[in-house]
Image (cartoon, rainbow, N blue to C red; front, side, top):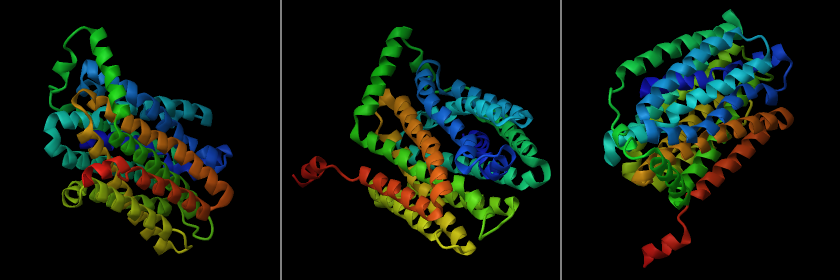
Length: 387
């Protein structure tokens, strides 16, 4: 599952450090250039729920295998495109292909390990996701000066294909979710799946985690989409290769997400989530001065905070989802997460392009504050505890 995360997220975010180069080659502003990331994450958001539903019928493992292999193959085609429009079209297809893995990953781990093990397991899976996101960004950022953006995407595609093949070999041959999914007529199974979506949309605790996924991911990607423009522009003026080093901050996300389970055991989910989101806001504020050390420190802090928040919210949603709606809840959480990436990433780039970094930080801080508010206990729940 960790190597599947590496393969998927290296491909998904490989164009992010290349946005200034794409903007220069195709005469784009930051908002339009960011579509190279946003159309893929948007397509992923749309596709996750259908894949989650399909996994209830065919099982989780086949979805994961098909996802990692097809997305890697599409990655091998991307370096050969000659127009931005064709690049966007292939990125849409790649986003759909990638969607299969995050759509079912948390539910797959829940069925493998049960409630007691899912928090730590989801944290480790997200650690693999962050390593993938970091390695894809670093590989493309470091190689673009030498190979151009075409060659940089090719390097990431080859690395992802190797990880995808390792995933296929390493996953257990039988999926514990397969057999129950295949019991009964197809119509009855589909009716049960649709009912599960309704259940997953009616539970306030699950709705709160979807809100965290939407708002926090939008803030995070909005900042990182604009990071390349900020670091390579004045007054910092870094080269693309040096600017791509900011993605080493993802190592902090890998550590924080892997340790989120212990934080939950000590403080509880709600306090852990509030602490993680507060840390993300503090990191964003650190990036405001035109000082390279502070900007780097800010990205380290906000990345650690965001991925801890994501691990807590994702594990919370997986643990609270009713047994008949695990796949649907996982799909809805992932839909919100990547919808936030797509919409927030593009809006963030537009804000940066028109108003600058200070306004971007103000906007994403508002989104993160709203995510915190969504997880406050409801008055009715408070009255019940007092009673």
